Amino acid sequence: MIEPYNAKYLSPSKEFRRLSLLLQIKENSNISQHTLADRSHLSSSMVNVYIREMTEEELLTVSGNSNRTISYHLTEKGNKYLYKHFLAFSAETVQIYASVKREITRLLKQFESRGIRTLVLYGASDTAEIVNAAIQQTRLVVIGVIDSDPAKQGQLFNNGTIIQSPENLSHIAPDAVLITSFARQNEIHENIEKLGSPDIKILKLANI
Image (tube, rainbow, N blue to C red; front, top):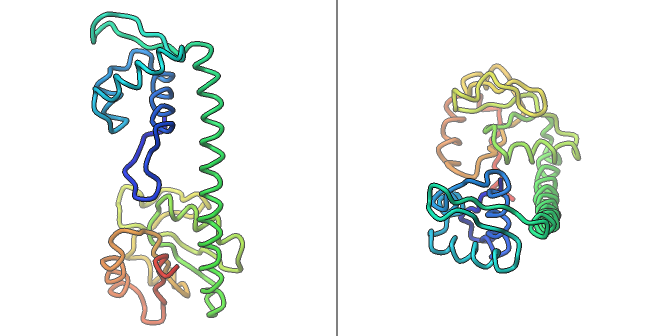
């Protein structure tokens, strides 16, 4: 399921919300309108407007006459619509991912030109996964991943590295630590200064 999100630059369009609603209905035909509204970040009245529109367009059928018995079903036309628009959405998303990866690669090559070779990523996040993919275009090597969340520590990062506690930073001894989180950067920076060696450089994606 694709859930809409609050964003300044990529605010959900009407097409995005329709796609999100159809995917949720495809996943669970007995989903309540309240749940649809909650997951789509819409009011129940707006969900009702979208449902009515898509029913009139013969993308959906609605059965039942109460909140407990109501169910939604995609028609053949609705399934074709969902498939077409999911592919279009996926293509746009891949383009955005590729653009972000290019900019991160450019930044990483700047770090590389300063003589940095080994990195520890601070923050086992989705952003860190994009950074790790971008690193493959450089001579930089990720020798560790750390995260302050105990639930992530001991888990495998997507490059096969075990996520460690920040307290292990001095033992890993990289050339630099790259803060991959866009939130709490100053707080993380201060934490690294307390834990790491003065020889370990601290880098931020915000430097982009």
